[in-house]
Image (cartoon, rainbow, N blue to C red; front, side, top):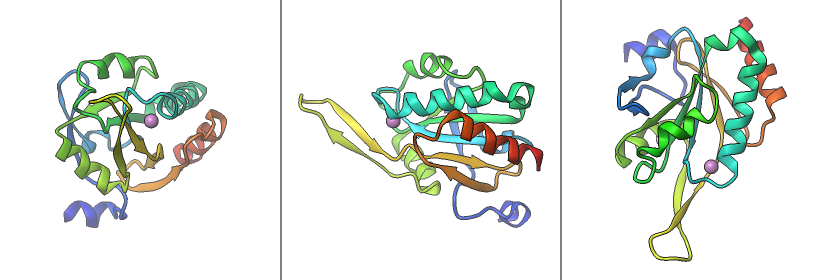
Length: 169
Ligand code: NI
């Protein structure tokens, strides 16, 4: 309640505590003072996630030292399969990426607060599945407030342009 009043959080995003790729609990509050990029995806995603995470990585690289003020966060929507693989996965993208996981319920709750909807799609072989998801890139401000989102397939140039704009504010 106090946070809502102080930070004027909108209806997208909100507090979370999840577990990072090293097993450490991480909360949104520790990233205050930085912009947060929040992305919901899963490591088995064949195309959308890798493309977007590569664009985020290139955008951060393009920012140079200013990228230290941006915290990219990947939240898995597939916690059952994204266990140990999560650390290697995020390490393949920008070095500052934090990969977060939790119980399916915890993840669903955080995703709902971001209005990030997803659903399992059964594969052709038993037990296999993919996950239908939006691939939206959320941008949160230095006080945790929602700034806006970038649609999937936003290119790195456009991303770094938007990040520069908000970093200058
Ligand atoms: Ni994906």
